[in-house]
Length: 84
Image 1: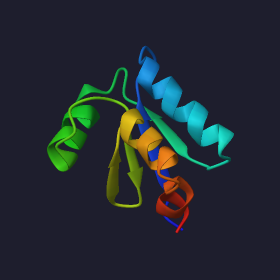
Image 2: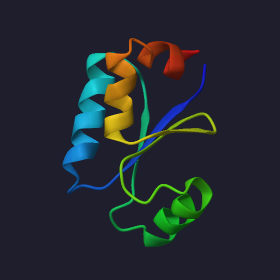
Image 3: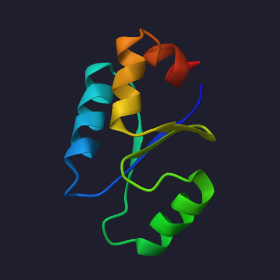
Image 4: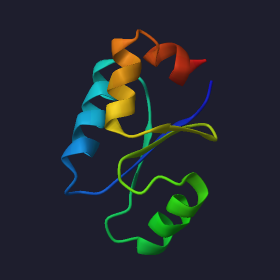
């Protein structure tokens, strides 16, 4: 099972939406707050090419942000993608 990690900031409404969906679906995740960690945020942007938060990872695979997470849910693919 891939480890789900969500990189967030405290002021991000999209981060809250993504975490709410994961909690509602009972998908366990690790949250890493980037609010004050600008170096880590830059490293993630270089690694993933993703410029905004949330940055949602399943193992080493970039899922994307909140919109991509909700799209997976709408397609019925969220659990399979994050839990297999």
